[in-house]
Image 1 (tube, rainbow, N blue to C red):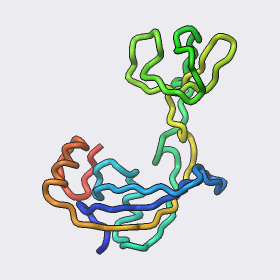
Image 2: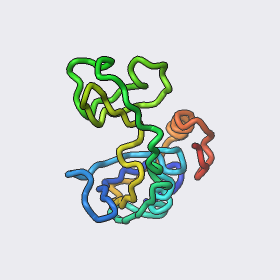
Image 3: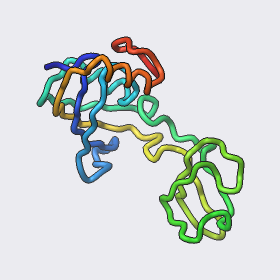
Length: 164
Protein backbone atom coordinates (compact mmCIF):
# COMPACT_ATOMS: atom_id res chain seq x y z
CA UNK A 1 0.00 0.00 0.00
CA UNK A 2 1.35 3.43 -0.94
CA UNK A 3 1.43 6.47 1.30
CA UNK A 4 -1.33 8.96 0.53
CA UNK A 5 -3.62 11.30 2.42
CA UNK A 6 -5.53 9.87 5.36
CA UNK A 7 -3.39 6.78 5.81
CA UNK A 8 -1.50 5.94 8.98
CA UNK A 9 2.22 5.82 8.29
CA UNK A 10 4.93 4.42 10.53
CA UNK A 11 8.41 5.69 9.71
CA UNK A 12 11.74 4.76 11.26
CA UNK A 13 14.18 7.66 11.01
CA UNK A 14 17.59 8.93 11.98
CA UNK A 15 18.52 12.59 12.23
CA UNK A 16 21.85 14.11 11.13
CA UNK A 17 23.33 17.61 11.12
CA UNK A 18 24.72 19.30 8.00
CA UNK A 19 28.12 17.63 8.47
CA UNK A 20 26.57 14.15 8.53
CA UNK A 21 26.99 13.72 12.30
CA UNK A 22 24.16 11.73 13.89
CA UNK A 23 22.27 13.88 16.40
CA UNK A 24 20.99 10.88 18.36
CA UNK A 25 22.55 7.49 18.97
CA UNK A 26 19.55 5.41 17.95
CA UNK A 27 16.86 5.43 15.31
CA UNK A 28 13.42 6.66 16.28
CA UNK A 29 10.00 5.62 15.05
CA UNK A 30 6.93 7.77 14.53
CA UNK A 31 3.38 6.94 13.46
CA UNK A 32 1.34 9.79 11.99
CA UNK A 33 -1.70 10.41 9.81
CA UNK A 34 -0.46 11.50 6.38
CA UNK A 35 -2.05 14.53 4.77
CA UNK A 36 -1.03 17.78 6.42
CA UNK A 37 -2.20 17.23 10.00
CA UNK A 38 0.95 18.81 11.40
CA UNK A 39 2.70 15.77 12.86
CA UNK A 40 5.58 15.94 10.34
CA UNK A 41 7.30 18.83 8.62
CA UNK A 42 5.59 19.39 5.28
CA UNK A 43 8.74 18.66 3.17
CA UNK A 44 9.04 15.26 4.90
CA UNK A 45 5.42 14.40 4.07
CA UNK A 46 5.97 15.45 0.44
CA UNK A 47 9.03 13.19 0.21
CA UNK A 48 7.10 10.24 1.67
CA UNK A 49 4.02 10.66 -0.54
CA UNK A 50 3.66 7.63 -2.82
CA UNK A 51 6.26 5.55 -0.95
CA UNK A 52 5.43 2.04 0.36
CA UNK A 53 6.58 -0.28 3.12
CA UNK A 54 10.36 -0.84 2.89
CA UNK A 55 11.06 2.30 0.84
CA UNK A 56 13.76 4.67 2.08
CA UNK A 57 14.32 8.37 1.50
CA UNK A 58 16.72 11.07 2.71
CA UNK A 59 15.47 14.62 3.04
CA UNK A 60 17.56 17.73 3.70
CA UNK A 61 15.82 20.57 5.53
CA UNK A 62 16.97 24.13 6.06
CA UNK A 63 16.07 25.80 9.38
CA UNK A 64 13.07 27.59 7.88
CA UNK A 65 11.58 24.19 6.93
CA UNK A 66 12.13 22.61 10.34
CA UNK A 67 12.76 24.22 13.74
CA UNK A 68 13.31 27.78 12.51
CA UNK A 69 16.22 30.14 12.76
CA UNK A 70 17.94 30.67 16.09
CA UNK A 71 16.47 33.78 17.77
CA UNK A 72 18.81 35.45 20.27
CA UNK A 73 15.83 37.37 21.69
CA UNK A 74 14.58 34.07 23.14
CA UNK A 75 17.57 33.83 25.49
CA UNK A 76 17.02 35.25 28.99
CA UNK A 77 19.11 35.68 32.12
CA UNK A 78 17.48 35.19 35.54
CA UNK A 79 18.76 35.25 39.13
CA UNK A 80 19.72 31.80 40.47
CA UNK A 81 17.65 32.30 43.65
CA UNK A 82 14.40 32.05 41.61
CA UNK A 83 15.09 28.38 40.84
CA UNK A 84 14.88 25.16 42.84
CA UNK A 85 18.00 24.11 44.78
CA UNK A 86 18.41 20.97 42.61
CA UNK A 87 18.70 23.01 39.38
CA UNK A 88 20.65 21.35 36.57
CA UNK A 89 21.44 22.33 32.99
CA UNK A 90 18.83 20.88 30.67
CA UNK A 91 15.89 21.40 33.03
CA UNK A 92 12.86 23.06 31.44
CA UNK A 93 10.61 25.80 32.79
CA UNK A 94 7.34 27.21 31.55
CA UNK A 95 8.14 30.90 31.45
CA UNK A 96 10.93 32.62 33.37
CA UNK A 97 10.56 31.91 37.10
CA UNK A 98 9.53 35.02 39.04
CA UNK A 99 8.12 36.77 35.96
CA UNK A 100 4.64 36.74 34.37
CA UNK A 101 4.35 33.75 32.03
CA UNK A 102 4.99 34.43 28.37
CA UNK A 103 3.79 30.92 27.41
CA UNK A 104 7.25 29.79 26.26
CA UNK A 105 9.19 26.75 27.42
CA UNK A 106 12.75 27.58 28.48
CA UNK A 107 15.73 25.27 28.90
CA UNK A 108 18.39 26.09 31.49
CA UNK A 109 21.56 26.11 29.39
CA UNK A 110 24.10 27.55 31.85
CA UNK A 111 24.33 28.21 35.59
CA UNK A 112 27.10 30.53 36.77
CA UNK A 113 27.83 33.56 38.96
CA UNK A 114 24.39 33.58 40.60
CA UNK A 115 22.54 33.61 37.28
CA UNK A 116 20.80 31.11 35.03
CA UNK A 117 20.76 31.33 31.24
CA UNK A 118 17.40 30.26 29.82
CA UNK A 119 16.82 29.55 26.14
CA UNK A 120 13.36 29.21 24.55
CA UNK A 121 14.76 28.26 21.13
CA UNK A 122 14.26 24.66 20.07
CA UNK A 123 17.58 22.82 20.60
CA UNK A 124 17.78 22.23 16.82
CA UNK A 125 16.85 25.81 15.83
CA UNK A 126 19.19 27.28 13.24
CA UNK A 127 20.46 23.90 12.07
CA UNK A 128 20.27 22.34 8.63
CA UNK A 129 19.16 18.74 9.08
CA UNK A 130 19.05 15.47 7.17
CA UNK A 131 16.32 12.94 7.91
CA UNK A 132 17.03 9.37 6.75
CA UNK A 133 13.67 7.60 6.76
CA UNK A 134 12.38 4.08 6.13
CA UNK A 135 8.68 3.33 5.72
CA UNK A 136 7.77 0.60 8.22
CA UNK A 137 4.01 0.38 7.66
CA UNK A 138 1.09 2.03 5.85
CA UNK A 139 -2.50 1.44 6.99
CA UNK A 140 -5.91 2.84 6.10
CA UNK A 141 -7.37 5.23 8.67
CA UNK A 142 -11.01 5.05 9.68
CA UNK A 143 -13.29 8.07 9.19
CA UNK A 144 -13.37 8.45 13.00
CA UNK A 145 -9.57 8.49 13.24
CA UNK A 146 -9.38 11.08 10.45
CA UNK A 147 -11.95 13.28 12.21
CA UNK A 148 -10.13 12.94 15.54
CA UNK A 149 -6.79 13.85 13.99
CA UNK A 150 -8.31 16.82 12.13
CA UNK A 151 -9.81 18.08 15.39
CA UNK A 152 -6.48 17.65 17.19
CA UNK A 153 -4.75 19.57 14.42
CA UNK A 154 -7.33 22.35 14.62
CA UNK A 155 -8.54 22.14 11.05
CA UNK A 156 -10.72 20.19 8.70
CA UNK A 157 -10.09 16.72 7.28
CA UNK A 158 -9.52 17.73 3.69
CA UNK A 159 -6.85 15.44 2.20
CA UNK A 160 -3.50 17.14 1.88
CA UNK A 161 -4.78 20.35 3.44
CA UNK A 162 -2.43 22.60 5.34
CA UNK A 163 -3.74 22.58 8.86
CA UNK A 164 -1.25 24.77 10.69
